[in-house]
Length: 97
Image (cartoon, rainbow, N blue to C red; front, side):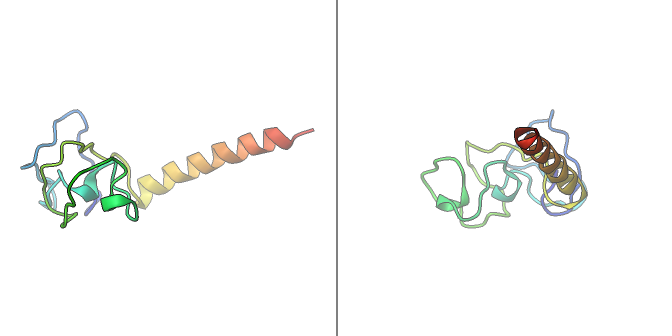
């Protein structure tokens, strides 16, 4: 899914440094589109990387890149709601008598 416009991206197709979103034309091989992008962590990346990528919205040469499949918005909200419901169900079963 494109971080900028929310367009679904085929996860079966490889995302290269030159890949662009078919709708908004933003770079797909970017930190903002990566599953490991985690603002606040070292270099804003969950993986151990040696160099800072200054522009998180532009294409980069990172070898750790993995396409993020779900973001915020409708799809992200649905995924978060399902995760929350599952956690609450487990919690309820833990304290059920």
